[in-house]
Image (cartoon, rainbow, N blue to C red; front, side, top):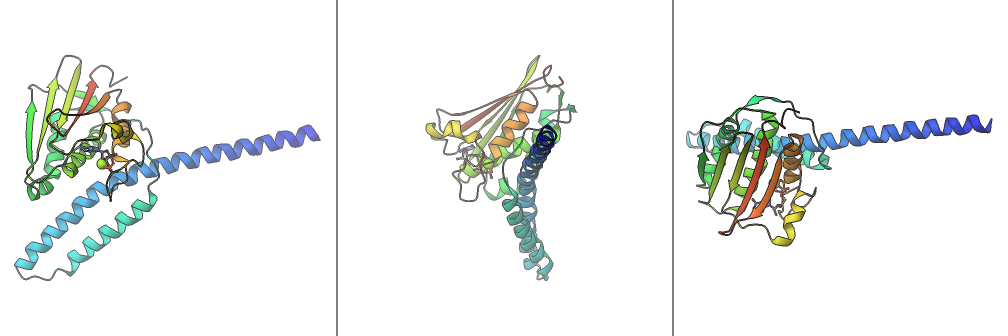
Length: 242
Ligand SMILES: Nc1ncnc2c1ncn2[C@@H]1O[C@H](COP(=O)(O)OP(=O)(O)OP(=O)(O)O)[C@@H](O)[C@H]1O
Ligand SMILES: [Mg+2]
C-alpha cells in the first residue's frame, strides 16, 4: 500500500512539474511576442498621429483617428503588463538577402527618420550573398538595434550600416552616433529588464541575442572611439542551415 501511494505521489509530482514547465514555456513565448508587437504598434500610432495632422489641415473630422491612437496606447499598456521575459527560438530558414531586410527596416522607420533628421548611410559591398535565415526574425533583431540607436542619438545623428559579404559569412555593423554605453553597463545589456530608459522594458537586446544565436551567429556590442555604439553581427553561410 505504502509503495503504491508513493508511486502515485511521484506521478502527481511529475505531472505538476511538467505542467509548470509547460506554463513557463508559454509565459516566455508570450513575453517575446508581446515585446515585438509593441514596435509595429508604435509605428501605427505615429502614422495615425501624422494622418490626424494632415486631416486637421484639410479641416476634416478626426474622431476615428483619435480612436486608433487611443486604442494603440491601450493595447500597448496591456502588452506591457504581459511582458515577463524573452525566450530562445527556432528560426524558420529560407533563402534571403540581408540588404533587402535592412531596406525594409529603413522603409518602415522612415517616418521616425524624417522627423528626427537622422541620416542613414548604407555601406554595402556588392554582390550581397544569399543566406539561409529567418527574414522575419532578423527584421525584428535589426529593428531593435536601430531603435536603440535612434533612442540614443540627437536629431540629425547618423547611423552607418555596413554589410560585408565574404565567402563563408556575412558581417553587419551598425555604427551610431549616440551617447554610448557606460563600460559597467556593457555586460548587462543582454539581461532581461536591464534598461536605462523611462519607457523601456529592457528586453530588446536579449531578444536580438536570442535571434542571432538561434542562427548560430555572433553578436558584439562595443563603444566607438569617436563616441556612440557599434553593434557587430556575424552570420555564417554554412552554419546557418544546420
Ligand atoms: N545603441 C545604443 N546606444 C546607447 N545605449 C544602448 C544602445 N543599445 C542599447 N543600449 C543600452 O542598453 C539598454 C538595454 O537595451 P534594450 O534594447 O535591451 O532595452 P531598452 O531599449 O531599454 O528597452 P526595449 O525593451 O524597449 O528595447 C538600454 O536601456 C540602453 O541603456
Ligand atoms: Mg531597445
